[in-house]
Structures are given as C-alpha cells and as structure tokens.
Image (cartoon, rainbow, N blue to C red):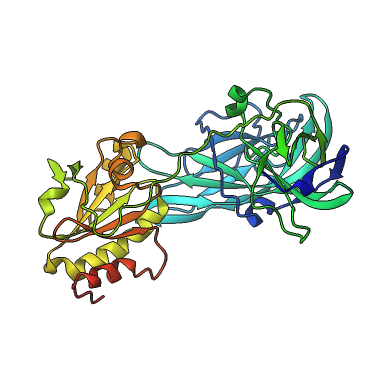
Length: 414
C-alpha cells in the first residue's frame, strides 16, 4: 500500500511526454514479446532488396491506426553479418528505409543473439483514419538455436510527466509491456488479465524527484491509501487521468510464491538422477569421494554460457585433485540440448547431463531439490557429499568458485 499522500480529492489529469529510453532508464527489464516469423512475403510488400539468404518476414504492430503495421524482413546468411529491413514509412517498399546490422554474438560459426533498438512511428486512430502519431523505441532480440529461432521485441520507451495529487504535483511514468506503443488497455475481469501485459504506473511519492520503487498495474482499479482509483489513459499514453472510483480493486498479478533459500553450507546434497551425455544415467551419489562442481544451466541462458569457459578453466586446474564438474541442463527442451553439445564438444571436457523433467519446473532437479530460482547457479559439494558453497550468477572476473575450492584445501592455479 502506498503512502496516504497519494489520496486524490478530485479528478487529476496530466499530459505526459515521450521518453525514448524511459523503460531502460527505469531498469524495468526487457519483457520480450515473441514475433511470429514466416517465409511467406506479406501482400503489402511491393519492393524488396536483394537478399543473400532466404528472407523471413514478420509484421509488427505499433499503435492502432491505419499505419500501425510495419513489415520486417530478416536476411541472415550463415557466414555473414545479418541485416534487418523494416518498412518504417509503411509504403510497402523495403528498399527506402535503410538497413541495420544486428549486433551479433557468435558461438563459433553459430549466431547466438542480436540486439537492435530502432525508432518507429506509432500510428493511432481507427483502421481507416489516423488521429495522431508518436515515435517509440523498440529493441529486437534474436536467439537462434536448433529447433527454435524466435524473434523477440521489447519496449524501450515510456511516458513521463506530472500529475497533481492533492494540489501537489508528482512525477509519473507509464510503461506498456506489449511492445506495441499502446497504453490504454483496461481490464474489467481478472480472468481477462492475460490478454495483455501490465501497463505500469510509477509515482513519485517522496517529493524528491524520484519514482516509487513499486509499479501499479494501471489496467484496472487500484488502491492508494484508503481509497480506490482508476487511471484513464489515452491510447498513445500522452494523457493520464487518475480519479476515484466505486469499482472494486482488481489484483491482476497472481502472487508469486516466495523463493526458498539455497541449500546452506553443511547440508547433505540431495541425490538425483539425470540423463548422462554419452549414454546412461548420472547420479550425484556416484561421485562421493570427489569434490563436485554442480552447475545448473540451459541452452537459452546467455549468462550460463558466458560462465562455462571459466568453469572449464577451473576444471583443468583442479581435475587431478579429485574434482568433477557436472553441468546439468535444466528448464530446457531436449532438442536444443542435443544440438548444443555437439556444436561445443571441442570447448569443454567436463561431464554434461540433461534433467529428464525438461521444462517442467515443478519437477526439475534444480528447483525441487536444490531450491534454484535462477540460473546459472553453481553448488560446490565436498567429498562427503555436503554443500560447501552455493553461487548464483556470473560476472567477469568472478572468483567465487575458486575461493570455495580453496576453502576445501584445493590448489587453484589459473
């Protein structure tokens, strides 16, 4: 519940301006939206560039007016930089808008992902009449793996301004999370909440020019102090009204269960069975008498793969001292796992395994036995099978694995 200073005695309104990277500045996360790709050319395309590979097309909707549909064409030759063609001016011609090259990361000769923030002209109105427009910034994310090649987008813009509350002006920020530059998405019933993503409303409650840390879902009535209010928002987010209402509060977001703490030092590590790469099963108890570096990862997890060269480096330095590395792929599909391992077999010499639960987090080894809520998570397990350390995440120059091994009396010379 927010402070009582937010009680509104009358309808308040404000005009909000566009902040190109407001959602990024607010550090609100990416909230990616998957875009459907097709090799079928959209009918509205009248002219195209010369592609170097078979193009893939998509249509992204920015706004709700007659010029809101923008065609995208991806040109992704295997051994060359990718290009993306976007019909910004909505004239069906993909040759007069300029091209952008992905900022492409690669794993050997396989593109891993690319990010390209671009500016769109969002069209507002009806299907036949445009009543307004605004610019918005959208980022694109391309993660390519065997069996799944999604194109994702995420909003970067936000609307910011001031609204008078009890005669005092407060800064506000509006952020839509569908990546379509539409802010007016009222929800009348809780069961309809999943049809759109939250429209976050942030309010400066401290009179110090900063925003409240919490975000209100402005799609439905919400409580401020002792009263209930609702936000009236224009489609483009430029106009905001907050007024009292007799409607009931709608809690649109299901309550998330609290994350369990990771296993403490000295806890007996639970045994598990995973599918061993190369055939057969892998049991943690089979490694009793060795120090085990248990690494939970997934093929879709960029930070996991960023950490692996470091794990390999550590393993080479300590493997002759009775140390094993077990890299268990969790929360993933088997097909990309079976493609990823052969593509990286020359990089890593430690043992891989796959959690037979696949994407079923309710049955996963990581979550049910080791209380893992995010990856990469690494456990250091001593020779008696007890937890010596639990490490979450990975950063450049991360030395936590080495430090944990040294506490067990191992010599780690990298």
